[in-house]
Every structure is written in structure tokens, then in C-alpha cells.
Figure 1: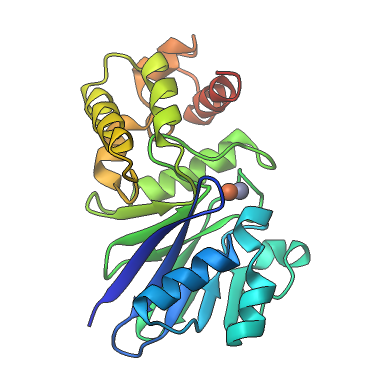
Figure 2: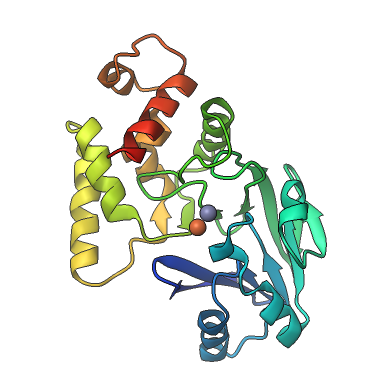
Length: 255
Ligand code: ZN
Ligand code: FE
């Protein structure tokens, strides 16, 4: 039986996700952005929350933990490396660990950079990647805590996942990411196509999430930090891809 993913908006521009294991009925929230939005989604589906999987310590990803634990007694799984920054974690996980939600399995990858202990959850069987603020459509999260080299290494690991993977990220930032990406990689046909699609989706009031990883590999400049044309754009031809990644990140910060 399959894993069902429910996508819903939360806060201003966050996404909330519920994953439901049909075989056992267990239901996990991926991050805890907002109590009301999560409860509304649960009610609409008729599901009961059993687990919460947390990616990083920022308030827009953890704020509803206490409420949801009190209401449902849900088990809370989160990053070992941020245990001191997040209240209410029951199980601590890191790189290479497997989290089970009923029969569904989620592999944990470390993706340091946005925060140092940021983790993502990958369900290989269904081809679902919950990337939170580590990987966005056409972008990556702001580098608040990390350094370019390790952040690039983490992102590159995600790039190694199959092209058919569907990515569920933490925010609807795609349109602004597209504007920046086109400014540094204007001749990229895959990027132009995705940017046009994003404009059409947003004009129709639709989310750009989830997105196809294979398409993002061709269009997202942060997944193309080892492409010669991007190194050249920043005058870094021949430089280490991590250094180019850092230049792209800095470019986005001031765009
Ligand atoms: Zn964040
Ligand atoms: Fe966030």
C-alpha cells in the first residue's frame, strides 16, 4: 500500500505536509509550522496525527510541536545536532538513520548550511523528498549557519537522488528564485521553461510544489554550481564548485 502526501499552505509562505501510511493508518506531519493549518488538514482527510518529523530549529518549522503533542500524543523525531534548540523531541536522528512511519521508511540526510543541523527525509519507495529549507525549487535556503563547502556537499547528495523524485520544500519561494536564476543563467532553456511554468502556476493561484528533481537539476543554479557557465559568470572559472556555490548564494542574498 502506498504513502499518501497531503500538501497545504501554512503561515505566510510555508508549506505543511502530512504523510499517511495506508497500510497502518499512521500519519506524520513533516515539520510543525502552524497548529490550525495542520489540524484543518488532518480533519479534511479524517486522519489522526501519530508522528511529527522535524527538519530544523527555526520557529516556522517547530512552533506547533507543543500543541500537537498535547492534542495527539504524537511522537516527535528531529535532528540530533539541534536537540538543544528544539523543545519536545522524543527521537533524535542524523545522517544515515531510517525513520519509520508505519510501514513507510524515511532515510535521513544531513544538509548543513541553512542551519548547521538541518536534515531532510527521503522516502525511496514513493520517490518523495521532504527538503524543508535545504532545497527549494530553483533555489536553496539562506546560509544562516553553515559554510559553502559543506552546504554544497549536502545539496550534491540530494542531486544524486533519482530524477523522478518529487521534492516537497518548506516555502513557496519559486517565483523569486526564478527571477534570480534567470539573471545569472539567462541562456538555460530548462530554466526558461520552468520559469514560464512557474509564472503560469502562480498567476492561476496554484502552488509550484511538489517539483520534479530531474527538472530542477537542469534549472536550479545551486544544483549547477559545477557547471562551467556559472563559474564563468562569477569570474571563477576553474575554481572549486563549493566556491562557486558560495558566490551564487551571496549573489542571491543581495539580489
Ligand atoms: Zn528555516
Ligand atoms: Fe523556513
